[in-house]
Amino acid sequence: MLARHAISLARSFAADPVPCFIRSPCASTEVHGQRLQQATTDLAHPVHTTEGTLMAEHPSGSESNRIAASAVADDDPRLAFIYQEAVRGLTQQQTLVENMSTRAGSLVFATAFANSLLGGAALSNGLGLWDWTAVALLFSIGGLIVFMLWPYHQYTFRFDPEELLDQYVDGDRPTTMSAMRRALALRIKADMAGNWRIIQRLRTALQIALLFLLLDILAWLLAIADV
Image (cartoon, rainbow, N blue to C red; front, side, top):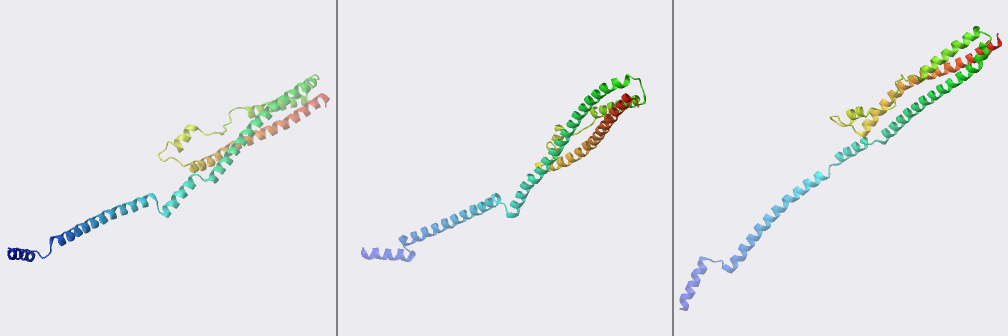
Protein backbone atom coordinates (compact mmCIF):
# COMPACT_ATOMS: atom_id res chain seq x y z
CA MET A 1 0.00 0.00 0.00
CA LEU A 2 2.74 2.42 0.85
CA ALA A 3 4.62 1.62 -2.30
CA ARG A 4 1.49 2.10 -4.43
CA HIS A 5 0.74 5.54 -2.84
CA ALA A 6 4.31 6.69 -3.41
CA ILE A 7 4.13 5.69 -7.07
CA SER A 8 0.82 7.65 -7.51
CA LEU A 9 2.31 10.75 -5.89
CA ALA A 10 5.38 10.55 -8.14
CA ARG A 11 3.19 10.35 -11.27
CA SER A 12 1.13 13.41 -10.25
CA PHE A 13 4.32 15.40 -9.56
CA ALA A 14 5.71 14.46 -12.96
CA ALA A 15 2.50 15.54 -14.72
CA ASP A 16 2.37 18.94 -12.91
CA PRO A 17 5.75 19.98 -11.53
CA VAL A 18 4.36 23.28 -10.07
CA PRO A 19 2.33 22.58 -6.98
CA CYS A 20 -1.10 24.06 -6.52
CA PHE A 21 -0.11 26.02 -3.43
CA ILE A 22 2.73 27.66 -5.46
CA ARG A 23 0.68 28.26 -8.67
CA SER A 24 -2.18 30.06 -6.96
CA PRO A 25 -0.11 33.00 -5.68
CA CYS A 26 1.40 33.43 -9.18
CA ALA A 27 -2.03 33.56 -10.78
CA SER A 28 -3.23 35.98 -8.12
CA THR A 29 -0.19 38.16 -8.72
CA GLU A 30 -0.90 38.22 -12.47
CA VAL A 31 -4.52 39.19 -11.88
CA HIS A 32 -3.51 41.97 -9.54
CA GLY A 33 -0.98 43.21 -12.11
CA GLN A 34 -3.70 43.39 -14.79
CA ARG A 35 -6.03 45.27 -12.46
CA LEU A 36 -3.27 47.72 -11.53
CA GLN A 37 -2.50 48.37 -15.21
CA GLN A 38 -6.21 48.94 -15.94
CA ALA A 39 -6.55 51.32 -13.00
CA THR A 40 -3.50 53.26 -14.18
CA THR A 41 -4.99 53.56 -17.67
CA ASP A 42 -8.31 54.76 -16.22
CA LEU A 43 -6.60 57.36 -14.10
CA ALA A 44 -4.66 58.71 -17.08
CA HIS A 45 -7.78 59.88 -18.98
CA PRO A 46 -9.29 62.09 -16.22
CA VAL A 47 -5.92 63.81 -15.92
CA HIS A 48 -6.04 64.92 -19.56
CA THR A 49 -9.68 65.95 -19.21
CA THR A 50 -8.92 67.98 -16.12
CA GLU A 51 -6.04 69.71 -17.88
CA GLY A 52 -8.31 70.61 -20.81
CA THR A 53 -10.93 71.92 -18.41
CA LEU A 54 -8.35 74.00 -16.59
CA MET A 55 -7.06 75.39 -19.88
CA ALA A 56 -10.61 76.33 -20.87
CA GLU A 57 -11.29 77.93 -17.49
CA HIS A 58 -7.96 79.82 -17.44
CA PRO A 59 -7.31 81.42 -20.87
CA SER A 60 -3.87 82.20 -22.13
CA GLY A 61 -2.02 85.42 -21.37
CA SER A 62 -2.75 87.06 -24.73
CA GLU A 63 -6.45 86.29 -24.46
CA SER A 64 -6.56 87.67 -20.92
CA ASN A 65 -4.86 90.87 -22.10
CA ARG A 66 -7.36 91.19 -24.94
CA ILE A 67 -10.30 90.78 -22.54
CA ALA A 68 -8.80 93.31 -20.14
CA ALA A 69 -8.19 95.79 -22.97
CA SER A 70 -11.75 95.35 -24.17
CA ALA A 71 -13.07 96.00 -20.67
CA VAL A 72 -10.95 99.16 -20.36
CA ALA A 73 -12.05 100.40 -23.78
CA ASP A 74 -15.67 99.79 -22.85
CA ASP A 75 -15.39 102.04 -19.80
CA ASP A 76 -12.73 104.63 -20.64
CA PRO A 77 -12.70 107.39 -18.00
CA ARG A 78 -11.23 109.82 -20.53
CA LEU A 79 -14.29 109.50 -22.75
CA ALA A 80 -16.53 109.92 -19.71
CA PHE A 81 -14.72 113.15 -18.82
CA ILE A 82 -14.95 114.48 -22.39
CA TYR A 83 -18.67 113.69 -22.52
CA GLN A 84 -19.28 115.48 -19.21
CA GLU A 85 -17.44 118.55 -20.48
CA ALA A 86 -19.49 118.54 -23.68
CA VAL A 87 -22.72 118.35 -21.70
CA ARG A 88 -21.51 121.16 -19.43
CA GLY A 89 -20.79 123.37 -22.46
CA LEU A 90 -24.26 122.67 -23.86
CA THR A 91 -25.82 123.56 -20.49
CA GLN A 92 -23.91 126.85 -20.43
CA GLN A 93 -25.24 127.67 -23.88
CA GLN A 94 -28.78 127.06 -22.72
CA THR A 95 -28.20 129.33 -19.72
CA LEU A 96 -26.82 132.03 -22.05
CA VAL A 97 -29.94 131.89 -24.23
CA GLU A 98 -32.16 132.23 -21.16
CA ASN A 99 -30.13 135.22 -19.96
CA MET A 100 -30.46 136.90 -23.34
CA SER A 101 -34.22 136.44 -23.24
CA THR A 102 -34.23 138.09 -19.80
CA ARG A 103 -32.17 141.00 -21.16
CA ALA A 104 -34.58 141.38 -24.06
CA GLY A 105 -37.43 141.66 -21.55
CA SER A 106 -35.50 144.29 -19.61
CA LEU A 107 -34.91 146.17 -22.86
CA VAL A 108 -38.65 146.24 -23.51
CA PHE A 109 -39.24 147.81 -20.10
CA ALA A 110 -36.44 150.38 -20.54
CA THR A 111 -37.66 151.38 -24.01
CA ALA A 112 -41.25 151.75 -22.87
CA PHE A 113 -40.23 153.83 -19.86
CA ALA A 114 -37.92 156.18 -21.81
CA ASN A 115 -40.38 156.78 -24.64
CA SER A 116 -43.34 157.35 -22.35
CA LEU A 117 -41.36 159.82 -20.27
CA LEU A 118 -39.63 161.74 -23.03
CA GLY A 119 -41.99 161.22 -25.92
CA GLY A 120 -44.94 162.98 -24.26
CA ALA A 121 -42.86 166.09 -23.55
CA ALA A 122 -41.34 166.14 -27.05
CA LEU A 123 -44.63 165.66 -28.91
CA SER A 124 -46.24 168.55 -27.06
CA ASN A 125 -44.39 170.91 -29.41
CA GLY A 126 -45.51 169.05 -32.54
CA LEU A 127 -43.71 166.61 -34.83
CA GLY A 128 -40.29 167.67 -35.97
CA LEU A 129 -37.27 165.99 -37.50
CA TRP A 130 -36.00 164.63 -34.21
CA ASP A 131 -39.44 163.41 -33.29
CA TRP A 132 -39.67 161.34 -36.45
CA THR A 133 -36.15 160.09 -35.87
CA ALA A 134 -37.07 158.97 -32.32
CA VAL A 135 -40.21 157.24 -33.58
CA ALA A 136 -38.23 155.42 -36.28
CA LEU A 137 -35.70 154.32 -33.69
CA LEU A 138 -38.53 153.14 -31.44
CA PHE A 139 -39.95 150.90 -34.18
CA SER A 140 -36.47 149.59 -34.95
CA ILE A 141 -35.96 148.66 -31.32
CA GLY A 142 -39.35 146.94 -31.29
CA GLY A 143 -38.43 144.93 -34.39
CA LEU A 144 -35.13 143.81 -32.88
CA ILE A 145 -36.86 142.77 -29.65
CA VAL A 146 -39.38 140.72 -31.61
CA PHE A 147 -36.50 139.09 -33.47
CA MET A 148 -34.83 138.14 -30.19
CA LEU A 149 -37.98 136.79 -28.52
CA TRP A 150 -39.63 135.16 -31.54
CA PRO A 151 -39.74 131.38 -30.88
CA TYR A 152 -38.65 130.23 -34.33
CA HIS A 153 -35.02 129.63 -33.44
CA GLN A 154 -34.19 125.96 -33.64
CA TYR A 155 -31.96 125.30 -30.66
CA THR A 156 -30.68 121.83 -29.87
CA PHE A 157 -30.12 121.19 -26.18
CA ARG A 158 -31.40 117.62 -25.84
CA PHE A 159 -31.33 114.23 -27.55
CA ASP A 160 -34.32 112.38 -28.89
CA PRO A 161 -34.76 109.23 -26.71
CA GLU A 162 -36.29 107.24 -29.56
CA GLU A 163 -33.38 108.08 -31.84
CA LEU A 164 -30.90 107.08 -29.16
CA LEU A 165 -32.63 103.72 -28.70
CA ASP A 166 -32.61 103.05 -32.43
CA GLN A 167 -28.95 103.93 -32.87
CA TYR A 168 -27.30 102.56 -29.74
CA VAL A 169 -29.58 99.94 -28.12
CA ASP A 170 -32.04 98.31 -30.50
CA GLY A 171 -29.65 97.85 -33.42
CA ASP A 172 -28.12 94.61 -34.66
CA ARG A 173 -24.97 95.28 -32.65
CA PRO A 174 -25.59 97.32 -29.46
CA THR A 175 -22.98 100.04 -28.96
CA THR A 176 -20.68 100.03 -25.96
CA MET A 177 -20.85 102.85 -23.43
CA SER A 178 -17.52 104.35 -24.48
CA ALA A 179 -18.45 104.34 -28.17
CA MET A 180 -21.80 105.95 -27.35
CA ARG A 181 -20.12 108.67 -25.29
CA ARG A 182 -17.69 109.38 -28.10
CA ALA A 183 -20.45 109.66 -30.70
CA LEU A 184 -22.64 111.83 -28.46
CA ALA A 185 -19.72 114.13 -27.60
CA LEU A 186 -19.10 114.76 -31.28
CA ARG A 187 -22.81 115.30 -31.82
CA ILE A 188 -22.96 117.79 -28.95
CA LYS A 189 -20.08 119.66 -30.56
CA ALA A 190 -22.04 119.96 -33.81
CA ASP A 191 -25.18 121.04 -31.91
CA MET A 192 -23.20 123.66 -30.01
CA ALA A 193 -21.86 125.06 -33.28
CA GLY A 194 -25.40 125.37 -34.65
CA ASN A 195 -26.67 126.95 -31.43
CA TRP A 196 -23.75 129.38 -31.39
CA ARG A 197 -24.65 130.75 -34.82
CA ILE A 198 -28.13 131.60 -33.52
CA ILE A 199 -26.72 133.06 -30.30
CA GLN A 200 -24.36 135.27 -32.27
CA ARG A 201 -27.28 136.73 -34.25
CA LEU A 202 -29.22 137.34 -31.05
CA ARG A 203 -26.25 139.03 -29.40
CA THR A 204 -25.78 141.27 -32.40
CA ALA A 205 -29.48 142.16 -32.36
CA LEU A 206 -29.30 142.94 -28.63
CA GLN A 207 -26.26 145.19 -29.09
CA ILE A 208 -27.91 147.07 -31.96
CA ALA A 209 -31.12 147.46 -29.93
CA LEU A 210 -29.19 148.93 -26.98
CA LEU A 211 -27.44 151.35 -29.33
CA PHE A 212 -30.79 152.35 -30.88
CA LEU A 213 -32.20 152.93 -27.39
CA LEU A 214 -29.42 155.39 -26.63
CA LEU A 215 -29.98 157.17 -29.95
CA ASP A 216 -33.74 157.20 -29.30
CA ILE A 217 -33.26 158.89 -25.95
CA LEU A 218 -30.89 161.41 -27.56
CA ALA A 219 -33.41 162.13 -30.33
CA TRP A 220 -36.18 162.77 -27.81
CA LEU A 221 -33.96 165.10 -25.84
CA LEU A 222 -33.09 167.05 -29.01
CA ALA A 223 -36.77 167.19 -29.90
CA ILE A 224 -37.60 168.57 -26.45
CA ALA A 225 -34.79 171.13 -26.80
CA ASP A 226 -36.27 172.06 -30.19
CA VAL A 227 -32.87 172.07 -31.83
